[in-house]
Length: 239
Image (cartoon, rainbow, N blue to C red; front, side, top):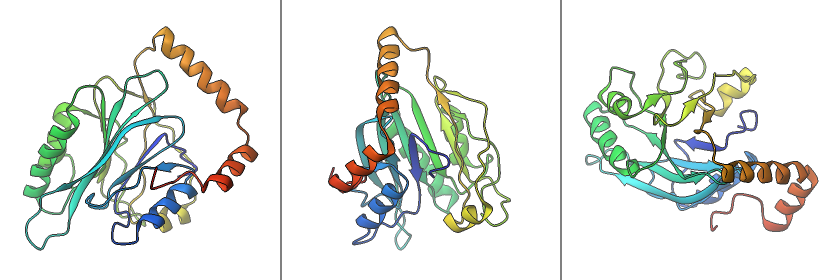
């Protein structure tokens, strides 16, 4: 995750049982990111963010499943770059039953369709012919590369994808050199990522971007380490 250095990180299958909060918070800190906490009912999904974006809202929602089936849910955060309008970001992990996936896709779309731009990322457990995939593709564009992500040891299936609303433009994909051993050890799925560009900024947004760049340039590694040691690190589940 440090190699990719995302502004927003959508995760699936994070620990979600009793006493798991600290494990997730520790992982966020190791990634150099922040976490809102309170992920019970998420079905194992959550979202980390970097200091480069502001978190306007963060919540986790449980999805209805059949009796005796594993819990499912999704995480939703509204994040904003300095001077920009918030973007809704959803982290999803759909199930193994096709009818359940299709139903859950509709619930998720209703939750994110509140105006403004949207990004949806996660494990769909189906390919482009599936109903859930088609539902997302009907209102958003696929912006991640169609590169197999599962299984991590020898990827053959494209299960992990990113969709974005039309107002978000995908930059050309730039591969990042990640050691093969890390890709296999980190998860049974390989990561997928995309750089998205917003529309042309207003003068106010340009000034905010310049101020953010100046602040970032003035922050040293020593200052970050000192802040983390004094305040308990960036991932504060109570924050």
